[in-house]
Length: 437
Image 1 (cartoon, rainbow, N blue to C red):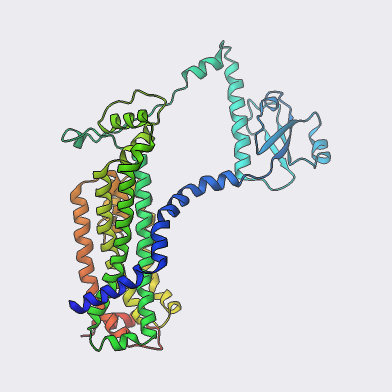
Image 2 (cartoon, rainbow, N blue to C red):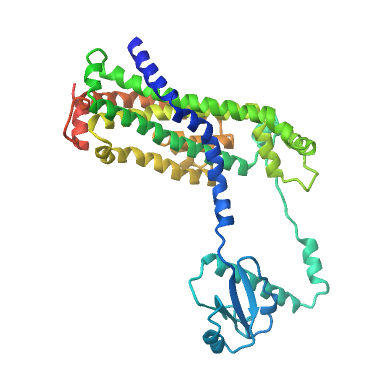
């Protein structure tokens, strides 16, 4: 154990003292926020030039009601269709509305002078659909129809409570949107941790094997101890990173957020947290429930403790396989073929996250959160939905038990592979190595 401790300390210190670790630890939360905001920013700044569209409205019902915006400008033309197509090539396109548009909704054609986009076509159709609906409503001859429609337009927000738990302890409302966002972030973080730190172990083994360092080390350390020390050392770096993020987020939620929010917002958030009904219609219940989550120390502590356990367990499981692959090859390029079967379950688990979001209590979500190769990512996507504690415990027990079983096989490959040079083994040969005594 002393030798394993020395290896753990060496692997830990080598990585924690690097500037890259400090930078990624600080910038990763910022990067995650940027990734979440990126789609909105891309949509905002990716708007093209304004499209000039000529409108020939044979029905005299649609053209004058089309609304121009930053992306499209409509101009009603008093020309025959063929003449407009031939002479107005300076426009982006000619939009033709058939005379019987109320009965024949397929009577709309766009003659574009360049490539169009799905967004533009959808926006044009949406406007025409709304205009046609309004024209059809006018046929019923209802006075002040638009005023009536505006008055009856209603938006309903629903607060959800866990009845099976609220009768026992608290009536705190739970937002499925907030749980979905948190589950997505946690699953994606687990995905990155497993791939990045697992690959880090594999690259470290390959580097030391090429430098012949392993041949010197195994003269005083058993191959199994060497592999375990390397895995636990790199794993402790991942755990430290999660702890730092947890402390930062808990600190912000407890000390910073309550002072940044207006008093009426925090008061409404407290009402929701205690299970009361929200009377202020100007506040968004989803936003308030997100605030209650950010300021709920117990809930955040549960999330991060679970994350530490699944990060460490998932890393141990995959790092053992990555270490075995690293010991069997001489360079990273040769490792790609053997690495593929390891990465497939990780990608599959990330895809299963969609099923979790659709129904976190389904049998499919349950079993994939118990299967050890997918459980770290899938279970972390389910935990924000406040699933039963026994399911989390079962998943952890199976995960760590699987690591104990798998590390035994990985160690057999490792002890043979570190002495093999100049040959890329096949999966069949790896199976033979595992059967060696």
